[in-house]
Length: 235
Image 1 (cartoon, rainbow, N blue to C red):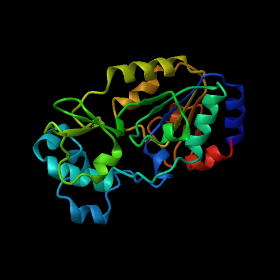
Image 2 (image 1 turned 30 degrees about the vertical axis):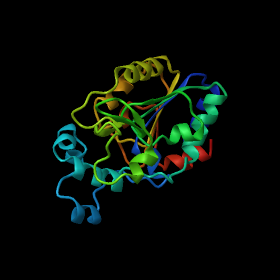
Image 3 (image 1 turned 180 degrees about the horizontal axis):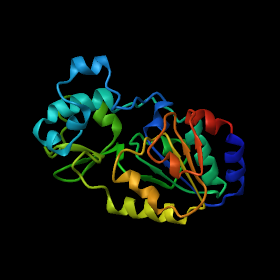
Image 4 (image 1 turned 90 degrees about the horizontal axis):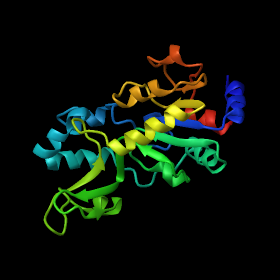
């Protein structure tokens, strides 16, 4: 199967990559949905509740306790998948990366055209005056991070109950609709509306690389159930 993928990559000129949490787990960033024993002893609410707009506004301090412990990994480094995608873009073969991840690792690897559907932990803004704060500020702050103006500093990430950025959506949709090859990697395709974007692809080279089966396996032209970093390291 990987030989088929290799051949398709070589022949394609407008590749788009659509990725999820599985791309980041190989850089040591755990999927927050995998609730472990430690999580159960530390938090009274499921992660989807904590990472919602309503919870952020009501229980801001508890939100940040979870956010700092479970969502921020400043020492994480790009893996083989990130690096290969950046290489393809530099070679003019890749139209862009559409990602559900918020860690900024695609840009760290050198990718320029990255559509971050759910935002980024690297960007933080005051809800009152709009002043920008970086990840380092959020890591070093205690409790609820505040701006110099006294306003609340919020991560530029899309919480449950918030809308996706319309410009990012437009860019991602345009890229997918123009692709001659769509590679979907490290995602169960269970999070909507993001997962619905793949419906815009009209080509005949849809590749799905994921450790476990997804609801879309039957639609794909090629399915590879392997670690995405391993697959990309062989391309």
